[in-house]
Length: 207
Length: 207
Length: 207
Image 1 (tube, chains in turn brown, blue, orange):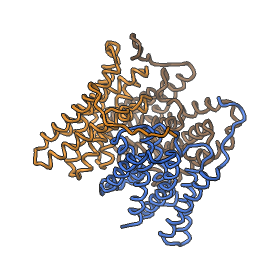
Image 2 (cartoon, chains in turn cyan, purple, green):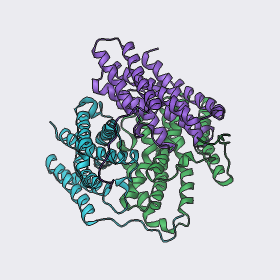
Image 3 (tube, chains in turn green, cyan, red):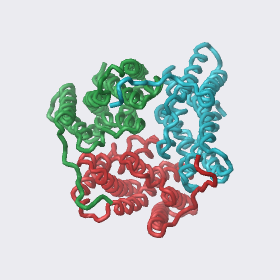
Image 4 (cartoon, chains in turn cyan, green, red):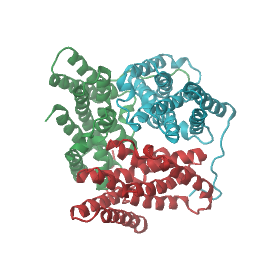
C-alpha cells in the first residue's frame, strides 16, 4: 500500500468521525450521519483528484473508502452520547484529520510530479475542503475561516515544510512526517495556547 | 434514446421547475429563475459526470438539456402566482424529480460498469445534489438534511433496490422501475404520513 | 500569450482583490486573505476547466496565476484600511472582474469549438461562479442573486453578444471586446442607475 493510500484511509476515517459528530449536533438520522461522514471524509480528496484529473477518483477505484466512512458514522451514531463535549471532540479529531490529510494530498501531488506551488495547494485542498463542506452543509461556522485560528495557515506551513524537505533532498517518507508534524503542532498550539496570526483590523467602521 | 438520456431529460425538467419555484420564493428576475433552474436541473448530473470523468458532461454534449431547463423556468415565471402553495408544489415536484434522477444516475453508472457501492452513490449524487445546491444558493433549509424526513434515505433505498434487482438477474429497465418506485414510495410516505428514521438525540445538552 | 490567457490573468487579479476585500470585511488573517483571494480568483475558471475536462486546469499548468492572486491579497491586506468604503470598492472591482472573466470564459469555449449555448454558459460560469463562492464562504449576500440587480443578466447579455458577433463573421478579438463592453455597461448601469429586470412578485403571501 502506497503512502498516499495509507494516509487517505486514515484521513477518510478521522474526517468521517468529525462529519458524524457534526451530524449529531444537527440531530440527523443514521443515513444523514453516513451522508455527512462520506462528504467530509472523501470531499477534500475528491476535489484534489478532480483538479488533477485523476481517473478514476480514489473512492471510485476502491469503494472500501466509503465503507470506512460509513462504519465510522455508525460507530459515532451509537456512541456520541457518551462524550462529554462533542464540539471539543470534533475540533480535536478535525486537527488530527488535517494533519493526516495534508500529507495525503502532498503525497499524491508528488507522485504525479506537480510543481512546488501545486503540491502546496493540493495539500491545502485535501486538508481543508472536506471540513469546509461539512461546515457549510451543517451550518456550522467554518473552522477554516474562524478568526484568529491557525487552520489554513497550519496546512500551508505543513505542506510548505514538505516541499522544502523534498527540495533539501530528504526522502518522501520523512517529508510527509515533517508535513504532518508541522501541521499538527501549529493547529494544536492554536487550539491549546491560542496561537494566532494578527487579523485585519480596519480603523474606520465596517461599511 | 437510452434509458439514461430519457431519465436525464425528465429529471432536468422537473428539478428545473423546483429551482424556478425556489427562485420565485426568493423573488428573483427571469434570468435568476433560469440560473437557479439550470443549477438545480443539471447540478446533480454534472457532478456525477465529473466524478465518473465522463467527457463531455451530458449537457455540453447536448445543449437541449439547458433549453429544457430554461423553458421550464420561463413557464414557472409566468404561472407561479396561480399556485396556492408554492412550497408544497416545490416539495412534491422535488419528490418526483428525485424518483427520476436516482434511476438516471444508477443507469449511467451501470452503463460504465461501476461496482455496486459506486452505483448506489451515483444514484444518490444525481438525485440529491442538485436540490442541495438549489437550497444552499437560495438559502432554504436543505430538504436533504431536514430532520426526520426520508430523503437521502429514500434515494439510498431506491438505488440499493436497483443493485439488488440487477444482482438477482432482472433486466435494467425493470431494475430502474423498481429504483424509481421505491424512492418515490418512501419519499411520498415521508411527506404524507411522516415516515421517518429515528434521529440522534443526545442526553446531555448540545455543547 | 493568447486572448484567453491574458483575460484569465486580468480576471484572476481583479477577482482576487474582491476576495481579499471580502476577507477584510470578515476580519481574517493574511493567510485567510490569500485563501479567499485564490478561491475567488481562480474559482470560476477552475469550474469551467473541469466542466470542459481541460487537462490540466489553467493554474496547475501555470502556477503564476496563484502568485498573482496571493500578491493581490497581500496588497489589499496592507492597504484596505485606506479605503473609505470597502463594500463600494468590492462592488466596482467585481463589476470589472465580471467584464473580464466573461470574455475569458467565452474565449476558451471558442478555442475548444463548443456550441453557442455552451459558449454562453462557459462565459457565465467563469464570470459568476468565483464571486458566488466568495460570497457563500464569507457569508455575504451573493451579488449574483441580489434582487433587482443585473449580474447574471449582464453576463448573459455579454456572452450572447459575443456569440452573435462571431456568427456575424466578426473576428474573435472584436467579439471579446463587445462581450466585455456589454457586460460592463449593463452591470455599471445597474449599479449607478439602478437598471433592473422586473422581479417575480407573487400576489398571495409567501408560503
